[in-house]
Image (cartoon, rainbow, N blue to C red; front, side, top):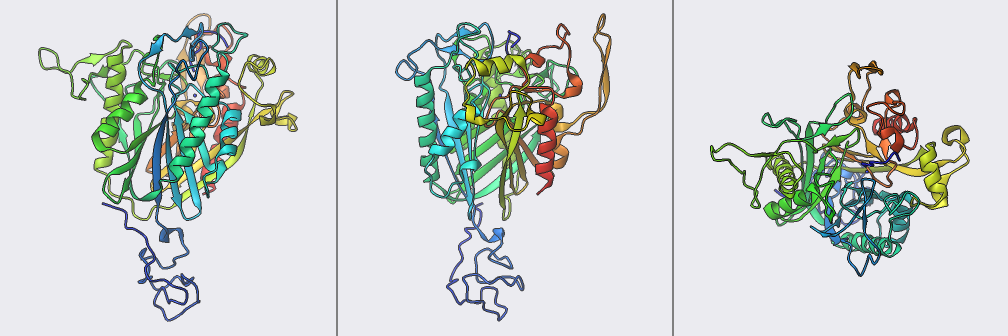
Length: 514
């Protein structure tokens, strides 16, 4: 969130062949009169999973489905003035450059279910998310396992309430939000009906471009300067060999066109387009550790033309783009898509992936007077039932937002959610360091931090930020700066000083519980 006012091939089809009640499924001479023997030895020769015990998750096929819904504001669904989210003073939308969408990925294995939804918005409130979960009618889908996140694009309409014509007036259109919620509910229900058996590949790839002024293709505008130097992806492939969905996770603000007045998904839209054009299926992009502030602003990005080919100068040297242009947004999206697909192409199929999903309550204290005022005057999008007030020791006098923390494990992939804009160090940790801000601020010490990555125990780690809510920046408490400090910015846009520590410790505990 950027406010300029002090105020997120072929998996074997795991059919159990010929396993009628009374079969001796593991061929050990013991028949327990059920469809699958509970004896785990010797290896099961009857069922298609070749595991010792059909009751294990390994004996169940993985199903996936994907879908998309267009959320672009129009005169019909957004009759009011469109105020774009991301910076203040607000920008009035003057047109549409490219569509905003909701993209969904559904996964099912036995009775374990998951629905990931990514929205081309700056953020989406806990109350709106809960209302969608309550309305979904997809049979067998656990409603708490519907994880809805925002890419955090800075060229979408105000969906939070703080980007209206003035600081006391919301920029949210009630008609548009009703349209959006209806569309997301329909998307989830429709996607769930399309589940099909899939194989899976997953990979992580390093981003290190020596010709860019920022080799990770993102900058950090706040000390200590840290960026996540890798991208993670997973692909789910149908029995016809065509991808059902590709999931991509990277770690920067979608704000290449932050000064534009045109509605746009920014670089994630181009990334998804490139993946769809190259391999087919749907592409779901989720933003990771984009707080802190991780941004493509001022970064030299290798240029790509509309066909995805490198752009060369007259000396046949690669052209790099630094200024915020549509060419740069396209180029960044295409480059990231190609990196993701390149990593997936060399990855081996995941054998017998097991889906695990766990969602827990996460209390997000609201102690910032700016945010409390925003809640009290109903500027911010929320419902009173989503505020916990009976734990004053943690939540203070106003209360905590009743957020959720989700964890997903699937083969080599581990995904953890965050309700806000997570800093890179919260994910990857950091060593102790000092930085001299000059007079009158002097040297500031940044203590070492252990990031949640160390507890993920995964070859393919993913962080799904701005998920289930938008609680703004999650700043390490040790890093808070007073008003007037050169790096004082995110402090005005944070629910409270304790929130990063509360989130990080809860995430570590959840990850280490499995």
